[in-house]
Length: 320
Image 1 (cartoon, rainbow, N blue to C red):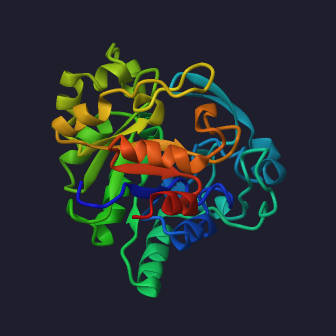
Image 2 (tube, rainbow, N blue to C red):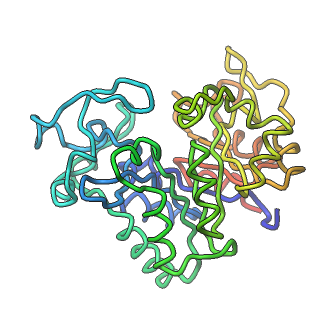
């Protein structure tokens, strides 16, 4: 790792302070010192990439008030989900919606004020911010439910790569990381781009494309010695649930760290962990109410990057 501290990734922007995946959330993350902003991407009915954490948009917009009749139930990656789905709306319809805070215990002051941005708008915004403040800003897009999108004829991974290439992002030296919880779309992406690719690793379960294809491997199998070696053939790193690096006991206490960081580094992979949050609902008891302690702990364990909802806290805790 060449940097003096882990990469600070604004998780959905500065989502601890503004509704997630809005230009205002990304703007605040950059102002707070984030090195990178993270847009999760889904696709509209007419094939436009927009930033939402899920294709179900009832939790994060006012769609229920404006399109009550569009509520439906779908099977997404094997799970039955009821709500409103972005792929049932055109971009023009999505642009009538306004974002809202997803979590009840966070401020709802900004609800109803911000649009849902397209990925092209985010790219334009980042270029504008770079010119304004005089530094590069990384972008860390995630393709959400790529196999599901593909089943609808929505080529989410190809569209993402095309958008990045159009904007001039083409090489591993560019400040881009493309991430996915699935495997096949990253393997396909490697054949199309030299941009950095990150295999997301959950603490439990299996990649959705493995489930669909009958591949029995789990996320835990992917971080075995052979699994990491396989990831290194197509990806530049892993984005791991933080408990896979620093496990937490059922009582919230810190227990012995794993060897994942060292194992991944031996395979030539960087390790980015998610998600560090200051809310008491999320902060493990073992940190004794001090969010800075979690940033310092993970940095001390050698992670190369941290996703956080509170970029300013990460900057303060990890300032050289």
